[in-house]
Length: 421
Image (cartoon, rainbow, N blue to C red; front, side, top):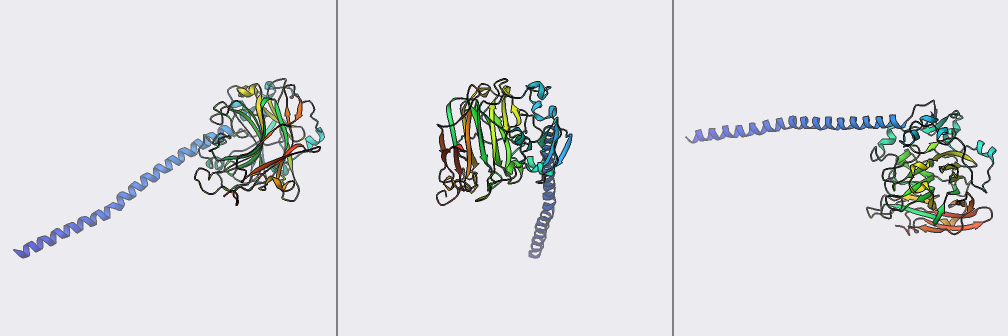
């Protein structure tokens, strides 16, 4: 009897072991099946994302009359003027540039420029190829799949992530500004550098802001300058850029020509393309002149580059407050410190040249010949302006005035240092 119990025990033990083995053998099969399902689901999501990206690229990239390969890897499409992205805007659909504003804008009184110089200026890498876009077309930097994949989402591609004045957003400034009056334009020459940006989520820029409305949801801005933005462009080259918004960067507006709105009229300048040459420490200095002003004849806000190069304009119909005038103009530098929310070390992203303002010419970045346009379209020097450096141990600003540069300032800094940990 005892031996029978023993055999029974052995048999039961065998069943337990066999059952365990069976479970062990079958588990990988079930796991493999689950992995395959998850992998297929991931592939489906990726395919859907790529379809959405391709659909967006087909919308934003217009048919090219001619294509130019830039030495820096950019592709510049020469797009027929009436096919440019601006005319996707509901208020502009079906129109052509000369129907919107057929005559050139009225230049501010007191502004002198040399037309011969304007026609010969070349400051963008793509133009070094010797190729150019024919009359009747506009050069547009092509958006590629890798550009959109760097963005946080398709809907945020080409847009700022937060309001520029938000103190808790990681945006830091060294700027000069005037406000509490009516302004119809701003002009300055901006020193161009290639500041190092610490990671793809940050940028460093120098620009002019034309602002109206409050700093709530109704903020209107027009912006132009140069920026280094690895997320937007995929490299560390300084690039000529524009921006606009009518709702504090929430849903309207974009960088460059990445949405409908700005109407380009020039066939020699590509907005978003790399600038060349740039300045060097203790070496040659290079700057670009920019002017944004409201044409008194039609009310549109025009952008001029260099010595008289008309790039294009923002139709007044795009705006609410800026349809009338600006109540603030601002000049200077801005960076994004992506470490601000984590409470870690400050970013080492450079502003301007990466050197403090006190180092002066050849070392620190500058703005010179600051001017404003008044209600009667007069171009006047800016005198009573304020300075703001919201993290002055990281980036600072100092002002000056002389006969050659008029009103000017130096600005910038290295970011993280012994006084900015």
